[in-house]
Image (cartoon, rainbow, N blue to C red; front, side, top):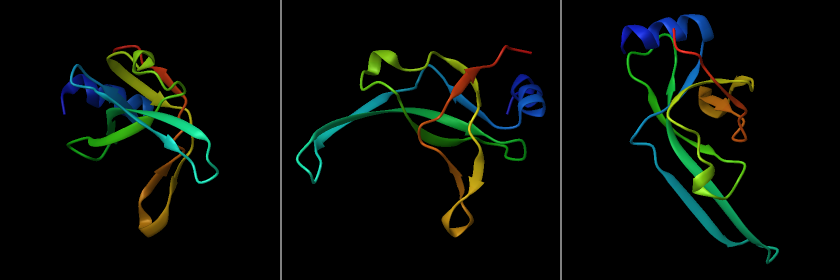
Length: 103
């Protein structure tokens, strides 16, 4: 973890990072009720203050278009983080992310 990321984490707590390697995946099909659906997921990295390396995560986008993906940068998470099943970290998949101003 670089020094700039550490400064941002100290200030913000948890962060999502999208870098130049970030990709999107779209899943489409029919629900059990027969309705068409499309979900687009953007790959990113979840940073926590006490971990040396981030965890790769998938963020569900509001739009089903990869063109609407988040730009490169760090983002704060405006949704509550909770402890889920088996003591794992759980975040609402419909995140609200705000860009972080670089330190």
